Length: 379
Image (cartoon, rainbow, N blue to C red; front, side):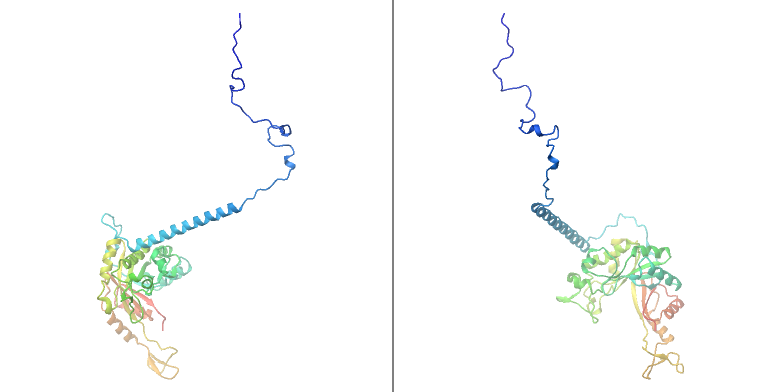
């Protein structure tokens, strides 16, 4: 019987049951250590160090760095421009559904305050001196400038418009901390804002300024003014109040709310119109007061000495001529003409003087409420 062949040579060397593995045998394989892939003398041979930074890699690195830097500058500029645009063109806030936590705007305040430099609100040593002096002199509050008559800003603001105008000068370094310390010491912090009189913002932004034709309007003293009818002006003032409110300030004295008489009739200026819009947007969690400016500075003869043989207020000049400083009676008579009645719930007398003690004595004797005393050099 013939045996059946199960295998034949038809597909020999053309097909195998398993795929090929490994590599072709090299003639130098006998010199390679088993499993290492390198010869046993490899460690003794000098190694060629690879360059960490090649010209190609360096160029690519700087190219990527420049691209990233340009992207950062573009994004930063975009955010700054957007912040500036939003502050200038912000729509009034809708407070119809908001719950008012405090109605301080409708309260009547009894203010007896003194002016301190914004720089002294440092949250440290200078603030300690302010608190001590204010309490010792019998005042119940302190007043400081958020925005001065010349347009400079007295605190470290984060508003894009203030940064763009470069208006910060002699600023409080820790306004929020100082406000908290004042309240803990039972002293009410009051912030004063010179609204339309401003020598910085109108120069930086002519669209928000009172103009005389194509140029800035200037009064007799060379001061420029913000335009009360400009939305940019309103947003500028509102932004300052809003930012200060976030630091704990609730009472604001608005000064210079009226333009000079020669141009005032051309604009919708005034305290009433401005505060109406501010209360509508910010609510009655703040108190807005109108500053009634009073000048109680007496003429003083420089380098003069009292004359003991003459009248009480006589002084003798070095040249021998005699002049007089204002007497107490004249001082009080002049004040009575300037202060006809109490300032009221929505106004406060802002009195500049160089006779603080005499002024306080007069005001307290007349039971005059709501006054702020700004002291110049005493005679």
